[in-house]
Image 1: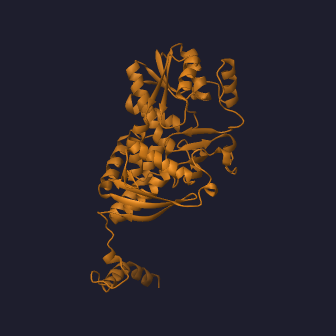
Image 2: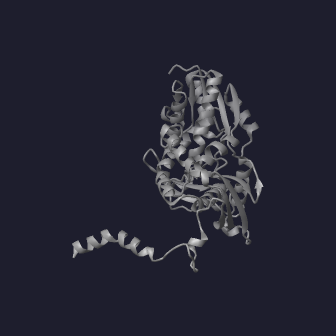
Image 3: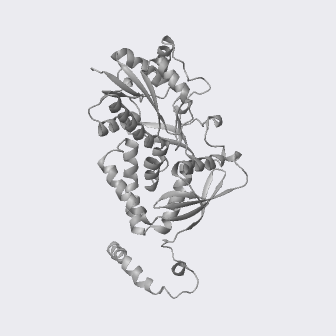
Length: 398
């Protein structure tokens, strides 16, 4: 492949550090190392220094935290996105944003190729490359894990040592992790056996539920058109609001998940996740919808959630079908306005109150006390009509 300049999605870890050196040697061209700040704990000065020392022409760090919350996390949570019933898509939502900025930098810097550190077994290679194709199809894509013979961690370590690249993986951290504002994921190493319980010392964003405070924390989340806009009556911008949710959730042991999921490429994968703020947000949002969404609208929307979530998980964020579904999901949110009260206690996030000026819940209809708005005798015909087909079936069977 004839390549003049490459923009590499660079984290500063073992894989992308080796890839940076390998690209420069293999293609004999300049390589720009690009890192996305999406809320992970990182020493960005150290990342810049390491990238330059490893051979990058320049290192670009883009602060994408606000865009991540406003244009990726919030749209997905307006849609109640969840994969296979439990995964809140923390990594899946970050990848299209990282790729979008990488493409922008490549076009701005006059690069003709982009590269990433995803392996040939995982989902991320698909997510990155579908985004590249959907945004800038003329860019060449280099996926080193599918090209080189450094096909094991040991070979990567040997290459790094030969080229004096610092090795961040140690015996104290025998797993791979990926962190952003929405979550942190752990996989590989000791977690490859799904029988193994995660080491309690591994968790970073949450305290163990049994070590959380003995006194519950009460929280009120106010929504406008399906997005959170205030906590305990205090209006906040999306980024600081979500950061506070993360802190509250983490302090109360909320958001831990041990999951075996089905990767898009076909194999199963064991992962452990921490999603404190996202777990709170999802519970609050769903609670508000129960009083502000029409029953049939909710049923149709809920039927689309698995498909919408799969599109994100599989890397089709920039597809026309995801955009179509997003428009549909957002149309449902016009009336999702109101406040939800939650009780956070030792790993549990419990809804204890919800209210809205647009609530469809009418106490005068639902009451068990005497009322004048509902004639209970009407239920007789309703039941008979709904039971007609069952009556016919029973007669036929007899």
